[in-house]
Image 1 (cartoon, protein in one colour):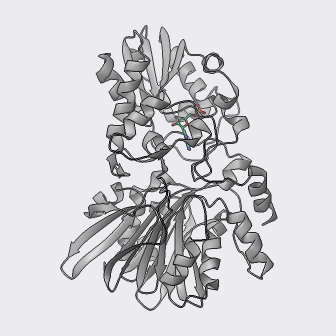
Image 2: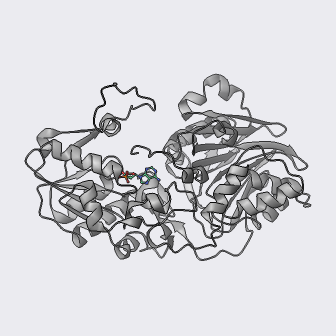
Image 3: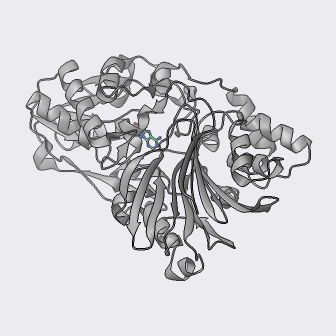
Length: 477
Ligand code: AMP
């Protein structure tokens, strides 16, 4: 993953997350731990696991990385055959641990826990209504709203209460819910965020697993048997796997950015290989925006698959001209004599022998604010490149995401405010070109799936509450 960008006020609304759930395994929490480890790229601020042994629900969450939080001692305190897990990237600050998931509460339906990937677009409204009638919120995350709706439901069963709650929330949600004796998972009717189903064959019978991405299944030897469908609720419990639609599915609006950047290339997301999608984006980019150059160099890791595609379609050799250091901590102490572009240099270093004197096609997946790209172009030039041609494997990012991807406000999105020529000058490249929307669609839609492209088009598939309102509600809370 490339370097995280600075936090902005907008980031407070956004939670990029990974979720995992397992039913029917004697070491459920240990497997959830492994699953979260595979989903670490989806969020690095906090992580948590809730487990159940059929009578009690246990929960542990903390700030930091999965491997640091879940020691053997901690896992020993999470017994049971049922578990859910969550890894989260969100705003820093003292409220961060309060917002870490899973949320676990005792209510009229028993002890329950929930973990959520996505953003509820009507959470501020629902929260206001709930507060007016006495609900007390502990965190600022929209996920807590779901728990309140479940707790207040007049339905007697947990699945009935959850069904009712799901019909009241709007926006993006892939949810994993733990009740004492079962897992219930659901996906919003547009299917914005992914949620895959896996199965493990144990001697005692099948165990069922659910995860944001299938790379979590590979690590635990589970086979991918399908996806939770948009508008579907799936229960894994004493009766095996039970599936039902809690609402009529809408036109699919699966997040294309999962394929562009967010998911791991070794995952199958929305039924297709992320690696193949990215290579295809790169191939189409080469056909659409060709350039006469000596070498194709990816910006690691996000640009690697598209650069391979660009190289294979153009015939220009692929070389690793930038090497990434994967062991960069968060709080590096910079020498007082400031080093130019320190942050980027910590992560990336050029291979001068590959770049010197060359005309370089530099490939990345996206430009957001443009600041990182500017530093990398400068790094490649300083390493002796004769020309730098920046190629981006998606269209210009023009509009913020309201469905769970961390994009800044329109004001900070460079492509919302400047022409491609102005961006080229800003980043300092000899040429700059993006993949067209049409070719992005071609890269992911050949199997008849349909996607949300709102970050490129500004056309949102659901009603959106204003940013100011969302922010104001967070400040009040
Ligand atoms: P910048 O040039 O500063 O706009 O940064 C561009 C880099 O940010 C690219 O390498 C992208 O892969 C990366 N990027 C894009 N979206 C995100 C995101 N939601 N979270 C973290 N990094 C991202």
